[in-house]
Image 1 (cartoon, helix red, strand yellow):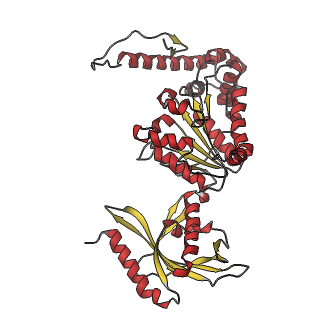
Image 2 (cartoon, rainbow, N blue to C red; image 1 turned 180 degrees about the vertical axis):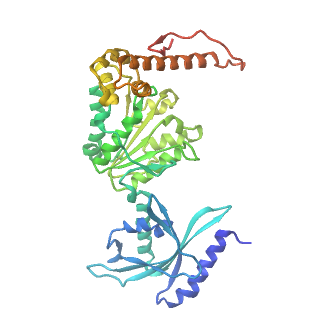
Image 3 (cartoon, helix red, strand yellow; image 1 turned 120 degrees about the vertical axis):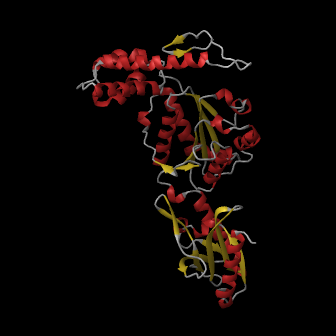
Length: 441
């Protein structure tokens, strides 16, 4: 018995042979085409008069009746995507004349069986003389679909539960030492403004890689979001690699994001959080080649990969210690100045800020940004719960103390329950602490 895919394929080919091919004056050939050719939103972005060679240009398409395939359209992010049924594409001589025009019938259908799963099957009937022109058109449709051009208004998510998201963090909302903050933005900006041309002049792929390393809570995620929003304001394409779908954190997602960047025809920023979680043993060799540039697709407009990690020690030393694989490593610190800690606290307290709150700022120095945020949010919640019309300094101190106690209790628990090599539980003497955080020996 034929599988579902084979059955649909045979039915489409027979229908084309019986209902369309006999009426065509030219010799025809059947082509298995990419699904992008029936992606309605991608087709909308194929520019009018797209040159397919021999003086011919794309002249649009129309929907055609098809007796064997029901016509329906799927949607993604409120935009039409794949259409089943028949589409008739037209190609005509351009302004300068050229070869005789031609048309192509494309029939598409969803197939679903144990071998193929749900996949779009598209078969085109193409005049033999026009096959090179059609293949060029196919390539353009695929480029548009794969580079997510229709979804450029937001950050595009590769491999996540959601397809896109809005970057909402402003650059002014990032609290870092001024020199470090300026250095990061200058590195990003100068790569696209000047660096890409230098890379190309030296015959090097314009592919730059930055790593943000720091303990959890220092604001690496907010920093990436701020760079995403800044990049979109420059007209750059921004792709966020996610490990949240059913496949998890897999290195092939990074590679697909780089492929997408290469076909984007735009400067592109690729963001990868927790890079160490994508580096499985069986993908390390590929990872080295991609970061080297050997197996990374080229984007002539420049691709900037920005990765983060809480655990730089988990990243292969062949990556960390060889320039060119990671070009620069920025250490994102805890709040190391009262000025930065105070500005962050004031930002989170908003209208509830009072001058007396400066009394807690010295205790916030050395804490991660997430620690300061939680201190503010919990204090505001306590004030609202207790029906205060303002936020007393005492509640801020109570909030800070509760958070420090929570971290200390967690550290004691993890230390006491750390397993020995024999699988037994050993209770160890707690390490020294500073501001509620464990210190290394």
